[in-house]
Image 1: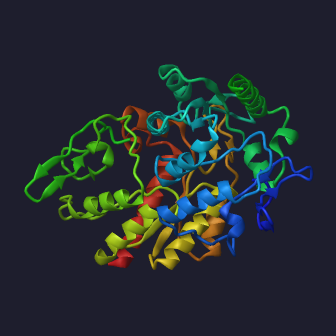
Image 2: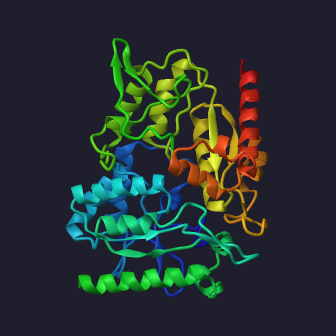
Image 3: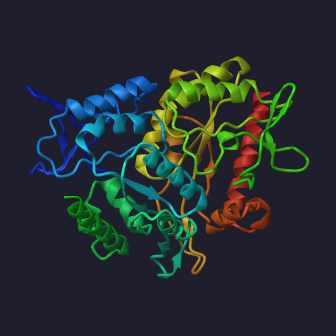
Amino acid sequence: MFAVEGKDIHQCPEGWLPVYVDKEQQLGVMSIAFLLDGKDDAVVWRGPKKTAMIKQFLSDVVWRDIDYLIIDTPPGTSDEHLSVIDNLKAYNPDGAILVTSPQAVAVGDVVRELTFCKKTHIPIIGLIENMSGFVCPHCTECTNVFSKGGGESLAKKYHIPFLGSIPLDPQLTQCLEEGKSFLEHCKSSPTVTALNKVIEKLILVDRDFL
Amino acid sequence: MFAVEGKDIHQCPEGWLPVYVDKEQQLGVMSIAFLLDGKDDAVVWRGPKKTAMIKQFLSDVVWRDIDYLIIDTPPGTSDEHLSVIDNLKAYNPDGAILVTSPQAVAVGDVVRELTFCKKTHIPIIGLIENMSGFVCPHCTECTNVFSKGGGESLAKKYHIPFLGSIPLDPQLTQCLEEGKSFLEHCKSSPTVTALNKVIEKLILVDRDFL
């Protein structure tokens, strides 16, 4: 997605350097993919090895003085999530951003994620509804491909901030496939407007935290 | 999805009875959800506990003389997948059905799943491309919401059977939300035609195995 596939991790005396997406080194990425021989290699690891890797990514990478550290976890409430929380606790993380799609089966999963955050005392920054409706590029009519409004009603029910709905846009996938910035190349897309609104809200939430 | 939420597991002298979806008891379901107190409870388990549960679902459930046992795994190549394979090996399973969506990031994940199947000597029955295009219900024009053809070219590249492409249909989500059978209620949907083709191919593959 960031067009960094195949890049190598470099070592410095302090540890691993993340792979930077931009020349200004404002956006750094760390992934297990950089440590594998081939991009088709499967990482066949049980929990303890994953836990050790997550710990290393937090402690042995030279993150420098960053404004945001975003950890993208898989769905579920298992080893990865427990390890991230265990290792981040000392740094007092802002909290979790929950992402759902609108249909009931997805919302059900995210409610369990919410229960998990409460159990582990992780604050919830807010909830995003992704894949929220599709505007046909041919007739501009909107269809709710995966039902509608599940994210917003979940946020209301559990009194957590609703950060916004992101509609589907085929141009997003296209930009990701071509390693282009969607925010820059498709400025007129309603999905870009929606993403920018979410970002603004997140920055506001962040200010409230300070 | 099967409208069995909240149902209870019953015990018989031989073990647990699965929850049956139909009166004729042709379709039985087993899920950890049936064993929890509330539907919002999170299962906060590390690998070993998940492994023990998977083993129990295979050995302690009275599955009777069934034609097909389908295990729906999460994405990835970790504890769940290793445990399923460890515990199924003795029963000589037909193999794995891989499901991808068409875009490159999803296909990349499924290639790693394929590498995993090869490493663990699990035959591959075939590959399905899901979320493959969307026919607008207003103007009937087709849009490839998540790129196009990634599944089919992957199948060709790795010489595995391609079982078919399933287009997006908002009626599918709607039927699932309402607990109705999509195959029965939306017979004219191209998605139903596509699903039936996949099922036919799977039954043929199954005959070849016998």
